Length: 462
Image (cartoon, rainbow, N blue to C red; front, side, top):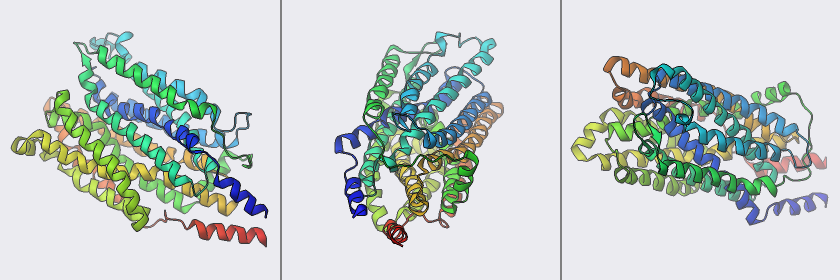
């Protein structure tokens, strides 16, 4: 009888408006993260003339920061006891940090003469600090926010909440990508400064970030029966590392992200300098094509997951990307023959298809792993699973950033500019997607929750 009452209570953990309020918090940070991920490397390298290798070092350091912050925030948000709950303090503190660091990242000219070559080390320091601060506050906030998912929802409502999360996330990623494509056009003058339109857009989306996170700051609470377990960080990390599925997923995502970093960082330069689409009118069609393919394929992948499972669906997405990325050296020639806009659309549509399945799985799989662990052990470790994955994942990303920065600087040394690097990065980074797909073959990311729940209830009744 106790079990039945508990299950009834769990069935209605969140009304729809709270589900939506929780999910919409994902929009602002994801929007700013996507825009910064796509543009900061390119803008600082071309508009502010920062050495590409120093640029890559800053980017690499920021990934190490975000990885460590994910890990530590995951652990401490699991163990924290406050009258506001475990996760909310991180969100209340971190969201303003995201907004301020993200804003100041794009206005170094307020403090430095970016056209003075003798101040390059100061520009590097400014970029290094602001980018690392942004990544720190992003991980600090969103690790806690994402760790809430298995604690504020049950199995029945989690797909809906995950779908809402991904809807807001895809809207943010797609909107951030569209603005990201256009960000270099929002800088004017020599030395470059952000234009009035660019400044207005930046302020607007910083405000939206705060506004959309208000429900998570004020009304969302985890279920009341979660036991706060006092555990050591070392033991909790060992528990996560001992989970074969978790380790396999971490490695697969690590190799995947090694390629994704190059894809996201080079996207703006590719479309502007390789495909010669350097006006807003020319940029809109491929940007909307990627947006449309991402959103549509998100729902198509949901159908595919029901029929094929998560593993096969994700492997298909990775293979699509592994086929399309090596085409970057010939895109300019194809554009000259068939038109740059059609070629850009033909390239970015499959990119959106391949990326959408990973973004869908990036929330669902860690939440599933955490729930399986909770069903087996009776302990909630959502934070450590959500957080620790950031350490190895961001080590992969940091390594990718250094390689990419060195690759771009090599292009400048050998050819005098970055065009060669913007054309040839695809074949260099695409093989890592196949490594990720190979690893996925040997792990189980499609758990049978009904069987696990039945086993838990059977053990409880013995």
